[in-house]
Structure formats: structure tokens, C-alpha cells
Image (cartoon, rainbow, N blue to C red; front, side):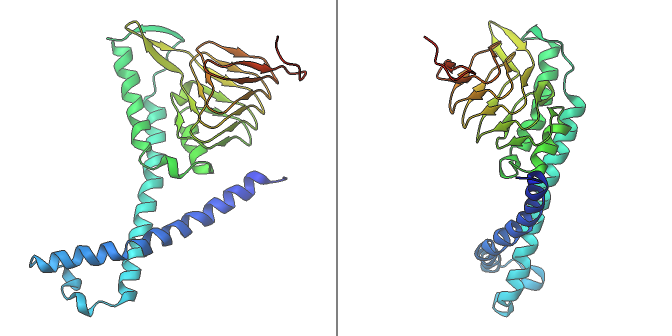
Length: 248
């Protein structure tokens, strides 16, 4: 579909206010219960001190206002976390570093911002907001990238080519810990590649152009998947070559 990205961005801009209204309307019973408990405890809630005098329309406006506040908070939290995560991310060369070292502390500090973003990021993927978050965090994203996951870790060490698709809850790790060391290595995904739902790609992996990682497959560290191949399983192995043939 032509202009798919533009259409998706426009729909995202429409959906967010819609979600705001849904969240707001859904909060009406909670607001009423909250004010009722305040009144029951003898606490005056300013203009809502007499609940009986409050109309349903008043609750509706308060609810929608609350929904807008929650949505604004979530989007701002994600964008700010991305900016701070990108600012403080460690500029490390691929390699092994002692787990008990300043490097590990620096890495862990940068990951805090990603954890904070996870309060709301899962609700903003796939969208231009989610992609903006990953770009701010340091990821290199090509055109038309679709990220339906909040689990692209170590974004500053991840490169996704044009038209890459990440299925729901697909995970990319550019780090792991083993034998008392922090192992860091970049992950590169070529143009048009697909990482299926729930798949896991470990550090140092290169996924070739138009390659497919099947749903829930686990690609071990430093694996190179040639262009056009399909890999599946735990650990992932080639199940179909680029020419359509199957391995012996």
C-alpha cells in the first residue's frame, strides 16, 4: 500500500484521543467511588463536597480530563525516557567487560530509562511514537520499520533496515551476562527482514535482507542468517534456503 506510513501515523493521531475518551469514561465509577469514600470519611473534596449535587456531565468532563492527563503523561514519559536513555547510553565497543565494573554500572544506568518507558511503551507500539522512542534511544531505523514490541533492548546497538517488521513481543538483546562478564555486541537486521512474534535475537547477530525468523525462535549470539533464509526453533536453525530448498 502506498503511503502506508503516513496513513498509520494519521490513524495513530486519531486513535490516541479516542483512547483518551475511553479511559476517561471508564474512570467515572472510580471517580465517584473515590469521592464517596472521601465524603464518608468526612473529607471535603472542594467543589465535589456534595456528591449528590454533581451531575453525570460533571463526572464525564472530569473523567475525560483524567484520561487526557494519563495519555499525556504516558507519551511524555516515553519520549523523555528515550531522550535520556540516548543521552546516557554507554558508547561501548563490542566485547566482554567485567560484570563488577564501572562499565556495567553505566550500562545498567542507561537501561533504567528503558524500564521506566515500559510503563507505557507497550501501548504505543506499533506507532510513530514508539519508533521515535527507539530513535531517541540510539537505534538506527530505516524507512517503513514496523516495531510491534517494547523489547528492543540496548537500542543504541541495534540497526533495523528499511521495511523491517518486528512481531508482537519480539526481543532483541545486544547484551548478555555470562561467566561474570557483560557481553556487548551490536545486532543488525537487514532490509525487509521479519522477526516473528515472540522471537529472540541475541547479541552479535546479523539477520540478512528479507530473512525470516519464525515466531518464538531463539537466535543464539553471534549468529549470521544469510539473506532470504527462514530460521526457526530453539536454538534457531535454517529450515528453508533463499532458493526455496530445504537443508539436508
